Amino acid sequence: MTAQAFADRCSENQVKPDYIQPGKPNQNAYIELFNRTYRIEVLDPQIFSTHAQVRDINWAG
View 1 (cartoon, rainbow, N blue to C red):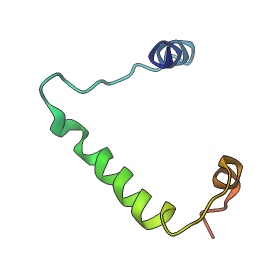
View 2 (cartoon, one colour):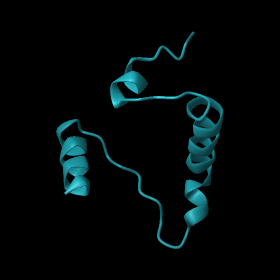
View 3 (cartoon, rainbow, N blue to C red):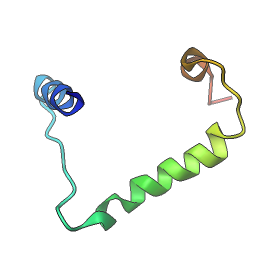
View 4 (spheres, rainbow, N blue to C red):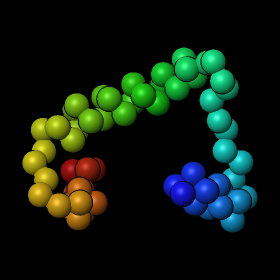
């Protein structure tokens, strides 16, 4: 269901998703490194009680 919603959203906004080629997981390494670094350095030091707190925080300072 999520994949179809994503595909529909891309189509509505004339965005062509660029998928990772089968058998080439290293194409995803850059974004996975970013996600890990962001989670460890930005999100982990914070304590959130709700999703709204995460959305409302001003990361720019």
